[in-house]
Image (cartoon, rainbow, N blue to C red; front, side, top):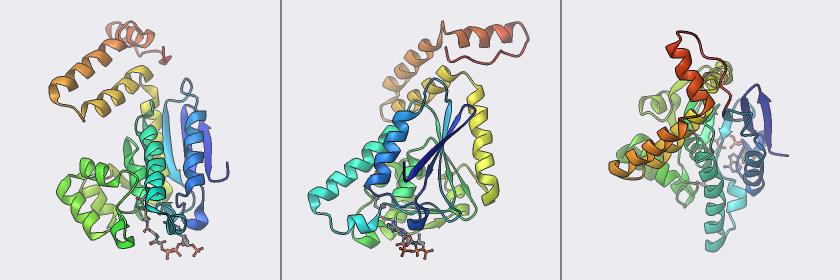
Length: 258
Ligand code: CAA
């Protein structure tokens, strides 16, 4: 892999977009590698993923403007699909994913972070969808996910105005859950990931599926989605151990993902 590194620490997998000379901008090769790394994640052993960017300046400064500059309409649409397919895979990936946003998170970078379940960022982070200033719309999900995260009014203001926001505003509008000094960001992401990793993996994955699938349907359908995934947890070893430990007033053994 040239542009995406993957490291494992215990039960946590860390994906790093690694093209710092271009502020980790997403060209086709980066998107292909991101997809290949997702293929390689051992879903039995790993319980949470972290996505971050290499260097101290950028998470991802967007899709690669040089690569996009000469695209035809059809090629533009295909490039949008390529990014959307990878980001949708991440969004629906069975494991929870934390974006540790360590700097510029613009265009495709903001969109990458929004495909993750949880966003935390460093104090120097800058978020935005500057695409209309380049003569295009956001193309990797930004017109759809930003309004789902921060509401339509704020999303439209940011997107129509190509207005970037700093970490404190991102926190205030709910785009990120918390803000840390840069050097504390990755340790905080790892701590959060290991907290998640300690819980029953089947239950955590079913929670992700229930929330992801339930948000796009009406409440009557949504609660049926939950019922099925709730039911699916029963008879698992981890459900039995979790409940027996409570009833026997002891701490549960390590969950087995079974
Ligand atoms: N694509 C390609 N290269 C990029 C890039 C991008 N999105 N962002 C930064 N780079 C490159 C620069 O061209 C520069 O390369 P050279 O050293 O070879 O000239 C290098 O990264 C460093 O960037 P700057 O010199 O510009 O750094 P800066 O500190 O002065 O500015 C910045 C930082 C404000 C983030 C600025 O780089 C910038 O505005 N980048 C573009 C941000 C942007 O518009 N992103 C949206 C792209 S469109 C998109 O993402 C569409 C979509 O939804 C799919």
